[in-house]
Length: 229
Image (cartoon, rainbow, N blue to C red; front, side):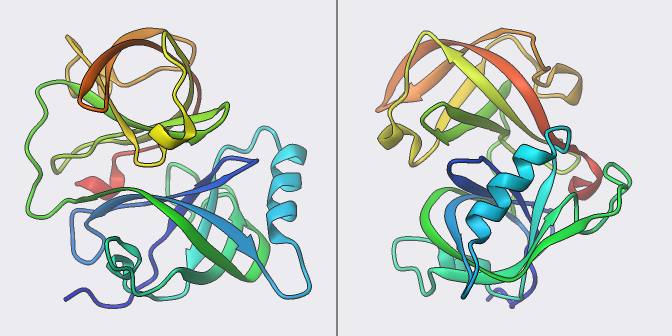
């Protein structure tokens, strides 16, 4: 039984807000989870505040959400026990780790997030089946597309990038549950990770069919190995 703790999250997107749980290979943080949600707050518009803050700070890649303690699996289908979490929204990483040492700036306290969709959940303990090559989960909506490295082992790397996808236009419905993209011939190592501006061929699994795509990473929003030791 998981206990209630604060589950730090990376916040992505502008038109739609996505929340990537920052996982660890230790309970109760052992979930790789991607959520879609909407900010709200009595007497304010944190969704607009977040969007405008991103526009006015284009060089800032990391925005994070520090929720009040809650039990993460209570959000998960098929029978979620909660649809809303509350916490504080930051420009920068609220924990100031070595990779992101800049002083975080709070842009919203006591902010609610209503979870509209659970895109992806993978429990990390016991360890998932090892990958035979590099793989990511594609998610997003409209033109805002992101890929998160699929985690399977201790010592792995946690990377999230935005990307342009060529060869297939994915519908919002296809993206709602995440699309696995595999990169044949690329080792599942940090040295082989996706690199901004460097196109790479991959295979997307859509409705049990394999679709050839070209992925062009446009911006690395997060990269860390620290929490996955």
